[in-house]
Amino acid sequence: MKKAVYLDTTILSYLVDEREGIRNFIDVTKNWWNTQRKYYHLFLSEDTMVELKRGKYPNKDKALKEADKIEILGRVENIDRIVGVYIENHLMPRKFEGDAFHLAYASFYKVDFLLTWNCNHLANANKRQHIRIINTRLGLAVPEIVTPLELFIEEEK
Image 1 (cartoon, rainbow, N blue to C red):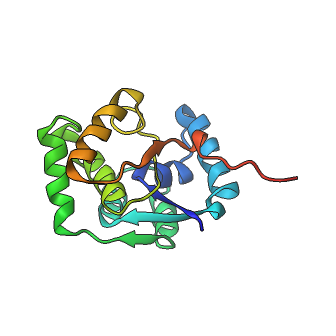
Image 2 (tube, rainbow, N blue to C red):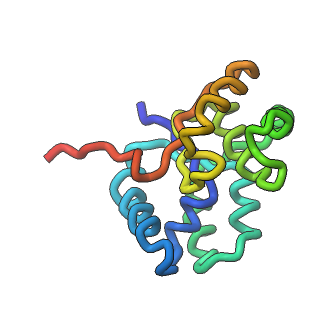
């Protein structure tokens, strides 16, 4: 059975980006997309779609086209409650509520991995213990929060 991967907004936006300043992230994202996604069951959330549509970044139409091919997790009442707890406990800043939503979806739906390039609020070793504590208190799963660099399966030759 394939493991589940929740994609945050950075993955799809970097997949279609062309800016030289983030070229390494773009290249890794494209490599992961082209060689690794077949090994996983991919998910987005309704909130990811909203962020993608509102965002200002190159090739937005291409990102939305790719997003339309991915299963979307519905927003249930518990998601808002979880986000509130994350913010109240300073796990995520109110200013970056979208990050709290990504973590809430991945946790609530028991997704194995939350894939992101957001290393400030999500894929951050200094946050892992806090996330584990809050999610355990809430009775939620704790997804592995990783960048595409960390989610490669070695292909047999």
